[in-house]
Image (cartoon, rainbow, N blue to C red):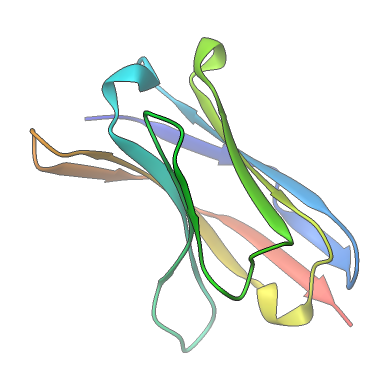
Length: 117
């Protein structure tokens, strides 16, 4: 099992920025894909952004052009830079790590992002 520890959430005004971090307990070279989901109260969990071991990225339409996902293999950490935040970005953000051959997906405990208007 991969242990994932998120950090960087908090309260920010609309238009502001936050950077989320997700530190993994093992070498992320061995992880096929990592990324972030979010869940707002009363809503289903939705994919925000993902990045593969090869560096390919994918974003939800609602965050394209505002959010950037990246990875630092030396630090076994994935980041989510969030700019031009909107109140509708308010949610708990969860980091995940997917290992396809093992058919395993591990999750972090989540970090709360609150954007005030």
